Length: 389
Image (cartoon, rainbow, N blue to C red; front, top):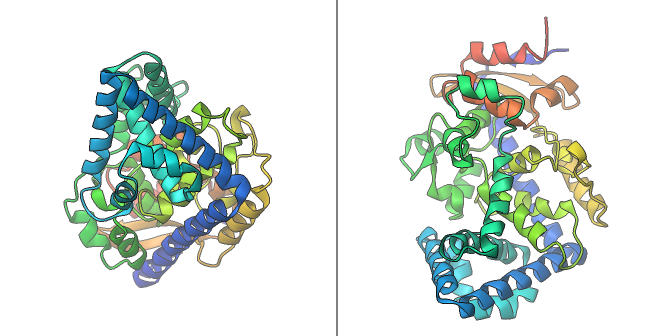
């Protein structure tokens, strides 16, 4: 049966808030699993300690690398201009020595912050010192190039004015459109309790305002998701970090889900913003609202998880997937307000295909939805491709 149309804006408002609250709760539950499961947190701590050692050795090794480290540290301090998780982290760990000496006792949240700092250091070291850090920086960029599969979509890209041979920033600048808070989205969403909670946390979301033509924002509006900071480059840094230190402790793709836990719970990104890089790089086959599809199951030839904690993580994802608040919706708008939405059963496989977070979804929303407020006709025309009459 095709989705049914509901034209009750106040009912849709309630459904949207409930779904957004559910995804934040899921992130906190995943974060708790990472923090309380030794086989998850200890390998991450070991990698964090190894990264802290690399940064400390580099800082003491040459003037160029010292400059790179100071530049990365300064950039993090600048990003932490107000109260929030990053500012708290830099207060608790005021030096590289403190990072190295305490890394093995960090919780998952602080490990994530250290990973972020390391990613920034690698980028700066490639600028100032080249050498092996240039190769590491290129590896980080490889994950970001996964934001779009250029093979099958080159013609569409050209038609959309995107150069297929361009630098990955060319793509990012067109898919990710954000600026310092300008107030428009904030004014529209200020009544939304889950968004108010996330923005007040002081994470990365509070530092950006998505522009009306941001591709992920368009997806958020149609699926009733929380607007955030757009597609997550920090998630790709985490992926690169885990692979760089894959020889430290055991390795499993389930560690990538730390992004869906910590980055979401503490307001740096939303669930779909962290899931997209994982999906576009082939590690998960995520469909919006089908949370169990976040499990790395060997999609596109990538390794499947064999971690001992996969059962408890699966249970958390499955519980959220079957929660009554997890409504599968396609929302259209009258101006900046809800007009109606198509809603379907949670087991709808046609919707699962439609909701697949891949390069096809990004291209569709980038080229066929002019801005964040999709009209009824735009949503209907897209939906009927998956529900032929």
